[in-house]
Amino acid sequence: MANHGFPADRGMAFAAQFAGVYLNFTPADAQSRAGKLAAFLADGMDQQMGWDGNGKLAAVAIQPYDIEATSASDAIVTVAFQSGSRRMLLSVPIYYSADGGSFVVSGRPAILPAPGRADLPQLAKPENDDAVAAELKPQLEDFFKNYGSGDTTGLQRYVAPGKSITSFGGAFTFAELKDIVVPVGGATREIQVVVVWSVPSGATPSAEPDAADANAVGARLEQAYRLTVEKQGDKWYVDDIRGAGRAVG
Image 1: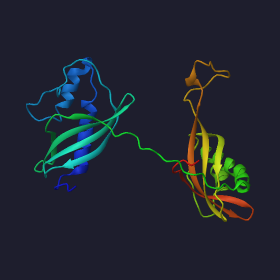
Image 2: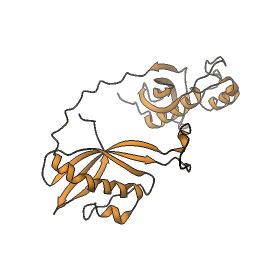
Image 3: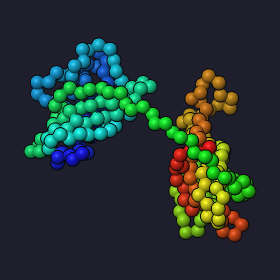
Image 4: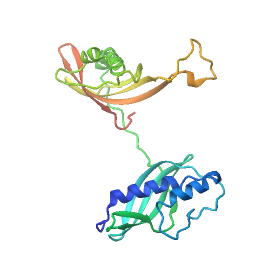
């Protein structure tokens, strides 16, 4: 759809900022909310934008979603947000003044349900080269240990000559190489792995932490990566590391 010259990116940012104020309210914050909303509303508009001052609403993960520009000055922006376990949308009509380069909310918003989840068909797992997977496993375990710890010298032993890979610098500790998928191929393969990281708790745990104190124990977090590896001589080297795509199998 044509945008009629409407500055879409700035309009969506304005509407998302408005939504962050509009979608969060409690009676204790009513006066503060009204003051914040005043920066977005046209003169004469209801300071609470239709809220009666009771109850409460909390919204997070507020992001611009879509925009329908109906003229060079008018648009309806859709903002996505999360409230509790629900994903929803907020439709916000806004007006743009080209003279001042500024925006204002031009009417009442509308909360709408977000589209449901897409059905994800399962992909067949490719034929796995078990022999190469077994050969790669100890080398990849050492690679990820150094990738997490930030040991540059240790990491470079597993990185292809002429390539450079930035490590986590100690932000995570390698715990386990949980899965490795190595398709059949030649000396260069694109593989997928599931790595388990130990995430620091931010506190010093005791030798035997209380089972009730879950915060005292570092978390384990599974992550999926896609690596390009190549064999030189009798050793595999990592050319590149990226986030994995769709899950297979």
